[in-house]
Length: 537
Ligand code: GLC
Ligand code: CA
Image (cartoon, rainbow, N blue to C red; front, side):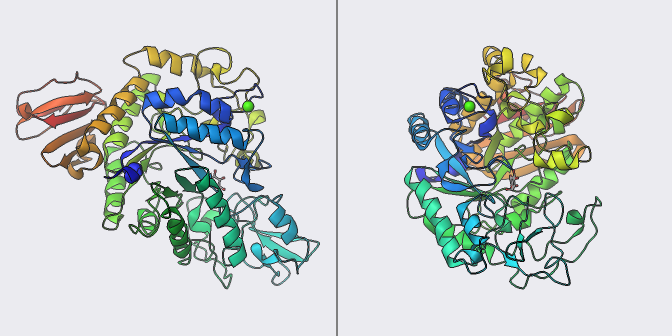
């Protein structure tokens, strides 16, 4: 792997900027706050940080509604702060990846203000305006955040499309000028030294040219959006041409990376994600959320992983993710029981994430076993939660402030945090875990170091050995003469792992054993929730 393939080798850490570190006491995380914590990230050993949107935004969807693609929202800082973040990160060997919301802007974006001002405005066609049909909206499309996807605009007597909130009008990627304006914004950030982009809902970008209604299919919950088959409002084949153009832009300089959020409802759709990974042509990476949607079960985990690996085109590179800002945190999702059990499962998950073939993505706090915060109804700020509580509590719980210490506001802010700090920060926080050699944080650090040291773990083949049977997943990672065996016990009880000569394997890193240990007998044994990495002697 060459230096410009850092995104294959590296660990990428997602920061939700509002919640990472607040430098000025307004209760909201910001860029100087992140700069102040770069040493922590360097020590953890991550290669890149991906920042959820920091562009100017009215914050209807906390930054996923952009009103200026070439400015930093004042709540996060300034362009000068951004430049120093990139520079300070680079000094520590950390790259900066930005979020890019290409499907929609804010209703307050000047482009949209112009577009909606009259039918013959030159930017009219930058958004998706349609006449109604039969006294109602143009078709049956639904917004993924609830309600119809078309908003009536009194002034010009047409509807505009919004696949998400009505404050987030979809742009029209079939319009050349719009496309050029977006690509100019991409260049703006490339020139400022960003290492790449996470492409928000990339599979939404292009819509059916004829605006046909979606067929209804059967879905698990009685919400119209989930009941539809999204044949015409997303996953249009033309999207791939845009991915290719973005890729060409990245390839104009060394070491840039694109990771696409290719969203499909649970249980996920690895084949769809993989369709964006034609090597050298489309995206470098794409998320498949099958694992993130999976319940705690070795068989289910294995199936999700195997499907993802099988779906990849030749030369395609996978990435793996267990948590993000839209889904319950893995430490909460995967364990409902005691703190100890959640911690044990988080360790098994950590070993999996860092030893699979593919790029691991970590969500801030995951390295501490941080769980979902408890949010009272009056504290909900996420638009989804506000609209659907109690059916859907929204996404605030997975966005609560990073627990740096057991102090007031967890050391996140000197002011009043924008979302409540979870009381659990008294036990789970960076300061405490940094001091404790046995903590999850230090376990993550060891895993990241090991991953970096062993070529088998980054570049090696992935050869399954136990496919979830008996709650065990085991696989080999092999590169040249380097042979590594990883075994994960998802069960609360003992398991045996039949290998030919158990004494040939020496522990590299383990939840239960010291490095260097060996075993004799007929099989390797696995304790409850044991995850161990061996190398062949
Ligand atoms: C993506 C983002 C999510 C956002 C939505 C609309 O799914 O991850 O947070 O609300 O797109 O931009
Ligand atoms: Ca702040």
